[in-house]
Image 1 (cartoon, one colour):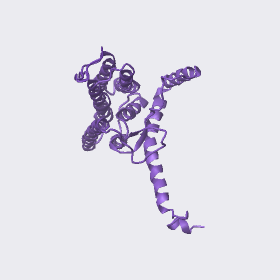
Image 2 (spheres, rainbow, N blue to C red):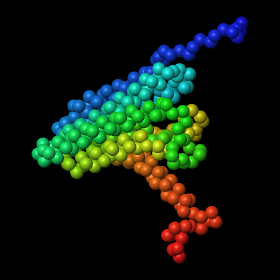
Image 3 (cartoon, rainbow, N blue to C red):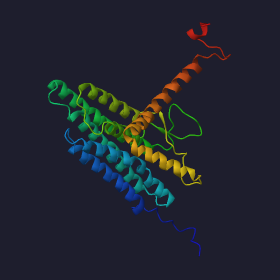
Image 4 (cartoon, rainbow, N blue to C red):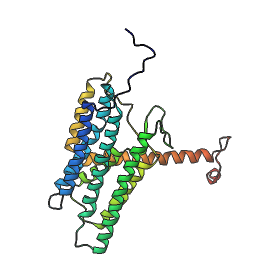
Length: 288
């Protein structure tokens, strides 16, 4: 029998679905492990810092699995979305900020100028905290924006993030630490560069610049079997040369947003200086 039209429909369930929540719990576990390893690291045991960086990096590709699995199994819920956001704050916000501070500032040698060392540690703590705040604000904006568009639009057939996503920002921190195999910063000059990099990544998260999302790539459709061989080869190369390749990937993705913004500003400036008849106005128009 069909349900009477006047009968009220039952509200959507707000409970927890086990399968996608297990992946989210794994992301939280990775963040907790990274925090513990960051606190155990030292100049004599730099592998703890490297372990923290690696586990943050490994959590990045698995971050989107809980959402994909929830959509594939029709188990998406408000509880799952909120839990996923909290997991991102822990694993890609708190854990990288602690790693960035302990690796880049807390291990500065006591033999250097004590005033400079104290100032670098104080500034470093503030910048790492700002990184965490920017990441939390980036997640809040993502959760509350229905269809946010970047100020510098790209190709219409591609989907973009508005601002650098927090997993990618955490990946920049982790890739830098792994590039040095966890050996902490011992130079004041390097610590200053580290401050600038952390501040830049935090700014990119709260910016409205476009970053490629890769959402048009799907693994659910039909693909040639050669793709499986290619993926296996890429994973093998990453495992063998992770120290350099992960650093290049992280830096490349970060600078892609900067270059996209610079290219858009340049093209916009050219359109503004071009006259309606196609000629250029300004100093460049008088050059022959």
